[in-house]
Length: 148
Image 1: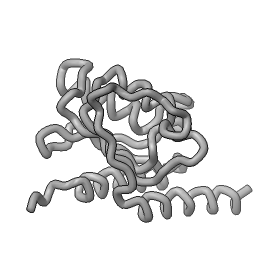
Image 2: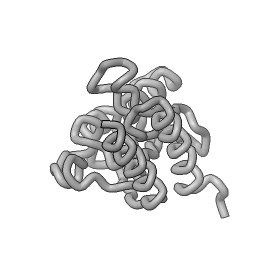
Image 3: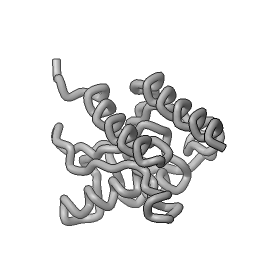
Image 4: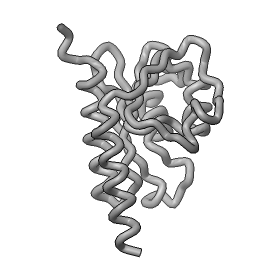
């Protein structure tokens, strides 16, 4: 049995989401993996950078491309705690990422609901550690509501 499975890497993405939570960012975390090695770690930075495009996935794509010295992520897997939005899924098309694994579904703005087209060779796995990913997001928004 491979210790480096989808659950293992989703736990790493959850660690990134917890960093975002602690910074007051929407707690979404992402890692990009190549050959069982994490080549990029990221979390939402939209508040800190005052940038609506600074989603965890976008930060991770940039970091992974920098690491690889090229823009295509064909042999890589993105692990992200929340289903990518239309922007992040659209960007994944251009990276030609090999696989996307996400935790919690996004019922209103997720790429599946909005029928965003992914690259034809991109495989998708959903619901990995879904409960843990959802719990952190719910906790964040409950705290936000209680502060306002």
